[in-house]
Image (cartoon, rainbow, N blue to C red; front, side, top):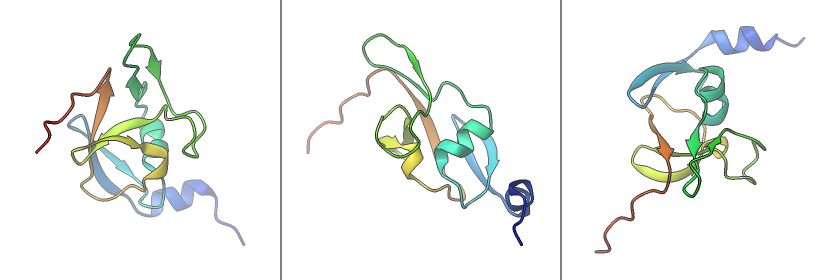
Length: 101
């Protein structure tokens, strides 16, 4: 009746890039889960102390999984589904402010 999760995950994958490194993930999972399964840790470092952070709540409350996705900074990895060709950059400290137009 139910399929084991390993069978579902192995059935199809998409390629995405994390700091230029190719990883494969199930397109039905969130980016946070894909990063954890690929062994990416920590996900980011805090702006003030530089302390390492990793996904904690996995439901968009804690903001410990912030990453840059396809050029957009401060994206919550737990709230974004994986997509083919996604480019992820891990955030280290405070992000640079973009100039106002």
